[in-house]
Amino acid sequence: MKEYIVKDINLAEGGKKRIEWVSGRMPVLGMIRARYEREKPLQGVTVMACLHVTVETANLILTLRAGGAEVALTAANPLSTQDDIAAALASLGIRTYAFRGENEAEYYACMDEALGIEPAVVLDDGGDAVTMIHTKRKELMKNVKGASEETTTGVIRHHARAKEKQLGFPVISVNDAETKMMFDNRYGTGQSTIHGIMNATNLLLAGRVVVVAGYGWCGRGVALRAKGLGSSVVVVETNPRKALEAVMDGYRVMPMSEAAKIGDLFITATGDISVIIGKHVELMKDGVILANTGHFNVEINVNDLEEMAVSKNEVKDNVVEYRLKDGRKLYLLSEGRIVNLAAAYGHPPEVMDMSFANQALCVRYIVENHEKLRKEVYPVPKEIDEEVARLKLKSMGVEIEELTEEQKKYLGSWDFGT
Image (cartoon, rainbow, N blue to C red):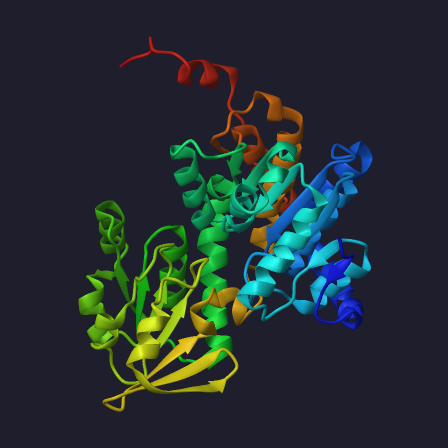
C-alpha cells in the first residue's frame, strides 16, 4: 500500500488546526475517544472507512485509532473531500487516499488502495466499499467481521443484497439510529444543503418557490429551513403517508410535472434515480436552479440536460449554466452531486457528533459480537442509541426525569385498568 494519496501534503498544518477546533464541538465523540484510549477495545483491528473526508470524519478516524485500530480512509464522493483534512490525516500517520475532484477511475483506485489494509471492519457511506468487496475484491470477504453504513442510499443497497442472500457479512445501519436519522438527516442536511446552495449562488430564498423532492428526514429538514428563510415550499413525494405529513406541515404537495412549472429552486433528496428528467426541464422557467442533496448524482438526469442544451458554461465554481434551444437558461449546482458537501462544509459538527459516536461504538460492537451476527442488515442496538443520547444530553448540561419503580411496573403490566 502507498502511505497516502492526497492533493497536497503541505496543506496539513491548516487541516490540523481545523480538526482541533471542531473536536471541541464534538463532545460525545470526545468522551468515547477518552474511553477508547484507556481501554484499547480495537487493538490490532484493521478498519477501512469509505466516508466523506471532512473535518468531522477526521475526529471519528482519530477516535478509532485511539482505540487501537489501524485505519485506512478513502472518499465516499469525488467532490466531498476537504484537501487540507486529507493532508492532515496523512501527516498524522492515517493511510488516506482522497482528493477533491477525483474522476471515476481515480475514485475507485483510491478505494481499492484503502482496501489494501485488508479490513476486519468496514465503515461505508453509500455502499461503494461494500460493493467493491463483493465484486472486485472478493478475496477480502473472509477477513471482514462486519460493516456499518452511514447513509440511506447505502442502507437500501445492503438490504437489496441481503434480500437476494448475497450479503457476505453483517451490516449495521447506523443511518437508522434515532440519534443519527432524526438529527443528522433532518437538522444537518437541512442546514448544510441551504448553506451549500447559498455558497454557490448567494441566492435570496425569501419569496421564491422551492421544490423539495422527497419528504424523508432529509427532505423534511430542507423544507423546514427553506420555509424559515421565507420560501414558498412545494413537496414532491411518492409515499402517501409522507405526502400527507407534508400537507399537514403546511406545504403544497404535487407531482413533479406540476411543480416544474412553478419552481425557482429544485432540491432533490430522495435517494432514487431520475427524479428530474427531460420532460420536467421542458416545463421549467428561465433561470431555474437545480440542486441535489442525495448521495449519488443520479437524481437529476444530467444526460437529459446535456442533450437538450445548445451551450454549457461554468459561470462560477459549482454553477454550470445550460442554455436551451428556446433561450431559457437553467443552472446546475455541483454537477448534480451532493451539494452540501460539494459547495459547503457538510453537516455541522454538533450533529455529526452523534452520528460518528454511533459509528465508533458500532465498530466496537462488531468486533465483540460478530460471531453471533448473521449476514443481514441490523439496526443499531438500542443500548448504543440511548447511550449516545445520554452522552449528548450530559455534554449539554441537560438532566432528564427517571421512571420510579411504580411507573416501570405499570408500563410493564396488563392488569391495571380504569
